[in-house]
Image 1 (cartoon, rainbow, N blue to C red):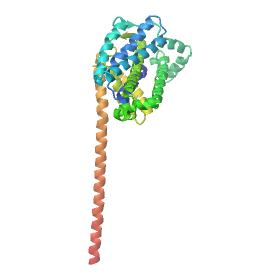
Image 2: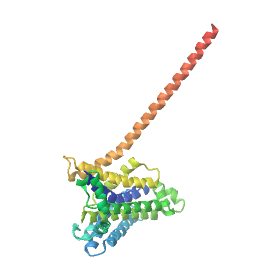
Image 3: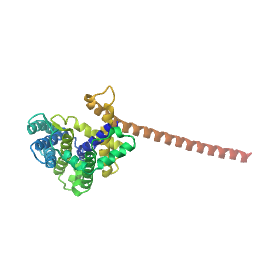
Length: 344
């Protein structure tokens, strides 16, 4: 159980970068960007091809981020300058990226198991610190000696990277450009009245969103040991599930809190999926069904809770009104009795 949760936490913190990208397009820009399913694979494909070609894995991962940015910008250009519907723009780019990804990879699958990746380099450096031994000794002390993870290095490294991206995103959204981006998602006409170029803010926002998605795809490919042309299918649903779950559980009172909620939602989503797959009658092929079910529950539950709270508030107000009316009736009755007594 602990091993499964640890693995889910590790995957969740990597997928959280993708979820932050989805949050940027769906929540900030209010743009239903389906490019995500393609750009996620593009990041994995670019990094895998460069790594097997002998390029430094960190540089290969950075290249994936740049190419993801370009893919997002193309979606924005198709929408803004091509005057094509937002949803259709994302679908067209997603379809185009499928063929582009095949061209990049040259085949449908590229294995990375025997290649030196960014994560293997991190693991090599981490092993020299001796922190793994210390942490594993702590697990043994609390009775979890049978569930020792192979390494803590990747989890901690990705934790630092993900939160660094979160804080950079928070800082960016508070800048003048970031505020223009948020205003574009809230009300295009209003921000245009201030002479802001909403076309450029949409292109920039989609570029940044897909850069994060592609970066996450590159890391996932290196973690899993392969890049596959079909690994991005349904990725937009996973991103939305992470955003919705996080917002429902942690709230959205500020940008900083919301981006934290997205990261938390991604981790919780991976843990829930991992636990669901341990049920006897479910298998890995049911993952998309599990994802859809989680999203439906995450969408329905907040509305049901709000409806329950509203009914509770109405019943309390009704009870208070009845109590107030009863107290007034009693006062009037007492005054009437007092008047009768005085007359007699």
